[in-house]
Image (tube, rainbow over the protein chains, first blue to last red):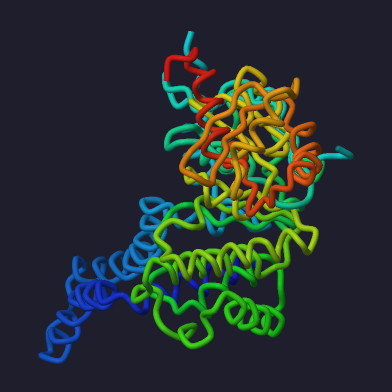
Length: 105
Length: 313
């Protein structure tokens, strides 16, 4: 339930950011090129196909990373942090890296 | 104190070579506790250790009898951090509802509780506006709302008064006092003495990462026996009153200020307070007001930090 709440919130936030739509437009450029090439009777090159297959998933990753990155940078991730839910491993590693230093001698 | 709700045992925290907290031993029970200290004293670090956001370099923090971080503790703990930012793209309703869902509530319960708590903190008319448009005062209220939406037993509030105007400040004090009256354990940090004084008499004083004092304000004041306690008496005939008081063993010094004020320095405030009405009656003096400037947190804080600096302040 908690993970779903995080995912839903991340999606809502991403959808309301103008940058998301800019990124989406950029992500669709290779597909658009392929579609135009196909309509013109040409065959999409393997590079274009690869771009579609790679860039589309990367776009999703970028969306999530942007939201998560914001959370880290502005520390808003703390609102999730104090809820009874599993912590993401990057957050755990960040926390332990930042807090497990030895005391000064 | 019975079993403490929040307990720090030998808690130390370093940020690289910088000392955040040093050997803090602390037990906090139900009710409101003011966490007091100047900027950089370690208040936020202590609260972050209590929430499990930071791991102690040494020592341990236990909340509700369990070491943090612990999901069971988080079901019963609310935290308002000092940061001013939220998920700015959301409305307050969406923000608080999402965090209520994350706390384990079902969709309907989360929605109704969020609405109720946002109304309670005075955001009824603005709860459907994006957080990005919120003023500082509204942000503080939203932070409080998300901290209490899941009805926690322990509420940790980091500088909840920052940026509030006097009216909003008074409302926030009222809200926090209500939480205390409900039997919750509320820890409120502030570097402004008057703020804490308005909310509670139970204080924890931090200075340069060290715990200087903990307890009831008056009791802490009494511990500082090298500083006489000051009592200010307003009456029509302060000289007549002073004449009778001069012979009392608990009076260290007497001063007049203006025509109506007598300042008494005493090393036994209880005896002084006990005897004053009787002496006034005997002398036929009507006391218009009786105040103790030393019961102000500012005085306690000044004395304590002077001690910590070796009396150099």
